[in-house]
Amino acid sequence: MRAFRVTDRDAIRGRASTVRTVQTLIDYRPADWAPLQRALTSEYGVDAARAARAFWFMGYVSGPADVGELRVYKHSVTRRLLALDRHGAAYRWMPDYSAYRRITCEDAFVEALAA
Image 1 (cartoon, rainbow, N blue to C red):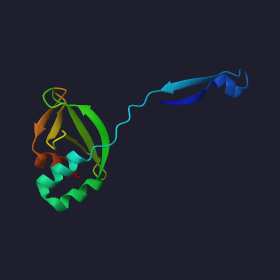
Image 2 (image 1 turned 45 degrees about the horizontal axis):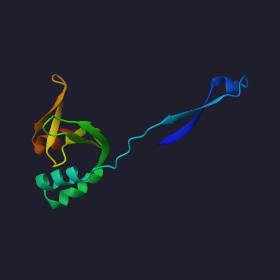
Image 3 (image 1 turned 60 degrees about the horizontal axis):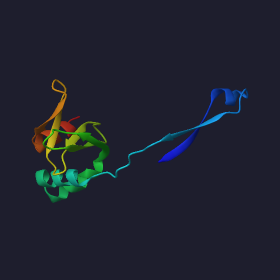
């Protein structure tokens, strides 16, 4: 938990001396790079695992009920997203259904890397 001070506008103007303390809870979990490296290796070979450096880890999202959490990565050049489950299987967001659907890793990488 991290606490920080937020100063009231009136205190800045010198009208009051009240300072409020606001506490925020941050749910920190480390980045999970294993699914991305697993997917790159299975799709393009061992040398391609270094390509994981071109991605940023964005966080976790809820995936299909039978899969659980997905890890979301963003390519640093194309700014396109890639969603993978913990095993490295790829998913595409389907806005019409407001849900993720499984796709091939090849299709997911083509979408993420297409400029």
